[in-house]
Amino acid sequence: MAKQAVQLSKKKRTKYRFQKLKMCKKCNRYSILKDEMCPTCGTNLVGIESLVKSILKKRLITEAIRILIVACLGIVFAPTIKTMYYSLFAGLIFCFCYIALTTMFMKSEYFHQLKKLLRTDFRKIQAGIQFDSDLAKADVKEQRLAMADEKLREIGDLISTDRVKIRRVMVLNEIALRSDMELELEGLIPSSYDRDFVKYALEVLKIKRTLISKKCIAYFIHYRDAIVIDFGMDSLISVAGSALRMKLYILEFSTFIEEFLDHFPKERVLRLCNIIHANPEVEWGSLKDKTMRLVAKKYYYDPAFKRFTIETERSVSHV
Ligand SMILES: [Zn+2]
Image 1 (cartoon, rainbow, N blue to C red):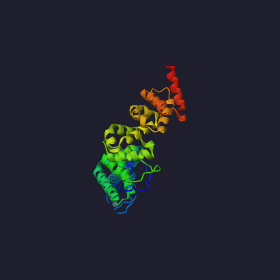
Image 2: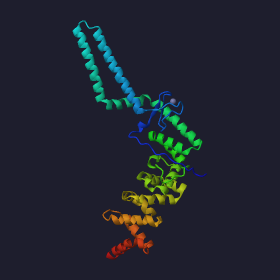
Image 3: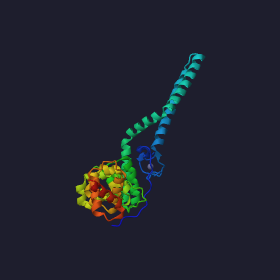
Image 4: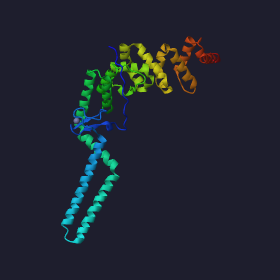
């Protein structure tokens, strides 16, 4: 089946993951999606931060009123004019101090209230995200893949289970991926072998090699047997080639790279030679010898490798 050509939206980033949570006060339902309006009743959703702030504000006003009521009772039941004034001033000072102190410690109060809300509304949040997940499922069914991906991305930001990751990967595998898209790879790595994830990672490798991170290469090495069965040896050669992206990766995965060295295209071998040549102080181990032997055998005629072959000859004649 042909892949769908779509435009994926940009991800909205927040400092903390919970900041994306919103609530519909009318339906009493939470949501993690980007939508500003409730899909059920059309009411504007309230962000969790505003929700916590309004709870704090309400609490502050209630407490201040309570203090003032006690002060008023003191005034009403005061036996003398003097004690009446004492009650009035004590009440006002107490009320003022309470507001001032609460404002001073607002930040810690905010986080305390937020934790409390997340704890007490845990079940509601869970149910809300399940509702969001059902909306994503409906989008997949109706082939609205960009919308489904956006929803699953937002859900995945809060819940990083394998199930959510694989559901998103399956949607992404039906989309024609392009290098100008804001793609993600490391965050989608599951905890066990998954064919759909490997299929997606190999597709990403073709269009955005920079996304192949250390964690991703380690995943390919760990599940290499299953990957070779499902995707062939070429997939491992491509991943080993992408490990040449950084000096640190080459050092970390030198054995893996060495294994596939003979199968690398010329441009990858040239890159490896350039990195080894530019870092003579690094202990490259057998990788350097094997690379130089390959160059002397396969690229001795190639002008691009001339400076490396001369050096190899020199070191051989020196010995
Ligand atoms: Zn609603």
